[in-house]
Length: 483
View (cartoon, rainbow, N blue to C red):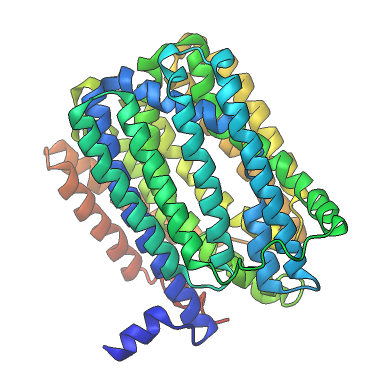
């Protein structure tokens, strides 16, 4: 018992620290997402596609208008604290001050400008609450970035778990009393505030003299460093929210509700590459420009692992989309089935880009990401203009798929120029196992096997085939931590 306790709560070596942090990040993200998705399913069923669409649209508008509240400060803070370069404390102080000021300015913009750009009337009344959610989310993320530098991800798990339990319980209660979009918005706001309070308490020793080291030169340096991030996050925020915003221009809240509901399923699965990327970022930051061979090995192994998971999830999800939508959201969301079938395929390209973006950032080459994101948003907007008026949410999902393919391709090429890597030769056995798994899914579905049982059995078959054909990536899951 003592050994388990030490392994999960004490950093003793690089290998143990990465495994421990990956474990806690998984527990944190998975438990949080499970709790929230429970509330989302309940709210989507109770409010219907129209009511849920109003809340989703309000969140999208708010996020779109807070595009500069996250200009990469969090990642800069983590990297700065890990690398501990000269005057890093002054850097952290300046970066934190800029983050706070920009976040405050952003919520003012949300409150006063949103009524003039919202095309869904019911969303306007939610904007003051949405601004509170987004502001405290931003502040909590800054605190988490400071905590991540200490590589104590178990503390992050506490924050997110408590926060999401509050959101779930309060959301159920408020929706039970008043089944309106405002109820779920209030639950999210309260949870966000509590999360901020907890992380502030956890890092209180790290922020005692947070603003004592600030000087004009450091402020200027941070601002110059964040310009590429500002552009990237501007594009990224537009990418994340433009589909729903543009749906609001040509379609109604019902269409938005259908799209947003299944988009949550897709976003839930993204915790896998996000968890791995977050756990490995401190290691990448230490190896970049110092031990490039080891960095390349980590990049290849990490991307391969994410693809090992992402490819079967995407193809299996597309085949089972009809049963998943009916099981999770009910008959009122039948129109969301083709949307999910397309959006779930985005995961094939979203999984590797998460790792690639962090790898590029570790080399301080974030300017290279601008081109990838810029190409992506141009493709996204152009295809939305062409497809949404005619095909609605299905058109938006096609646009999301095409733009993600473009972003991933460009990012892949950029990272190869920085530190050449090769992944595709490692994926042959994954493709074979996925093919056999796909046959299994289709066969079980044909015989009307319950969708949950189908997923479990097909997953077992997939990994068993990998084991039989001696897939090397399974061994590299262990190797990745031998740094």
